Length: 199
Image 1 (cartoon, rainbow, N blue to C red):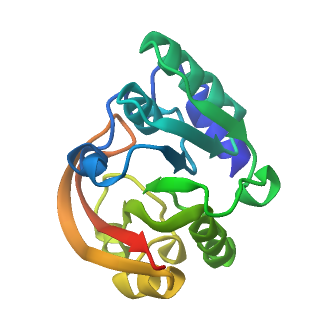
Image 2 (tube, one colour; image 1 turned 135 degrees about the vertical axis):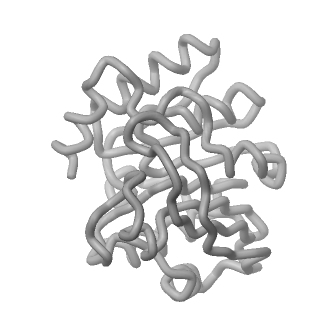
Image 3 (cartoon, rainbow, N blue to C red; image 1 turned 45 degrees about the vertical axis):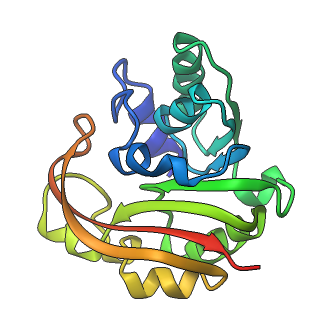
């Protein structure tokens, strides 16, 4: 996976453009001002967006090329992000230390996913907010991007099972018009939710 993303992010253009994800843009105000973590942040379009708005942003990805692009984007927008290369298991973020957690198209192999989400949830403060969008299992019927393996896609049931410490404010599977660069283009099926960590 690391080699795959390094190849994608080494291209001159931004794979998913430089604009933030629409769902995040519409809902970021639900996150209290403070520290926000962006796992699988890629080229930084979402973390840079929130950093510009006064949030203290931490981000990570397995791709060194992603970090290079993210830092360039932060400089271009006169802001700072704390971007690490590694996995959530190796980076040792403090538990209960983030007001927000933003997971945008963070697709990881199914065998790792449950532990990945469990660790991330421990990093969120009680009542901290999580914003999530990823491709649903119905995405295999579309040609607008995302993994081609069913087990890497999501159902609402998957999400409820993998985030037992989250109180879901809403969760939905919906069709969206994606316009996020050449790799996310056209109609697609996504699962979205906003929730808070239970006390």
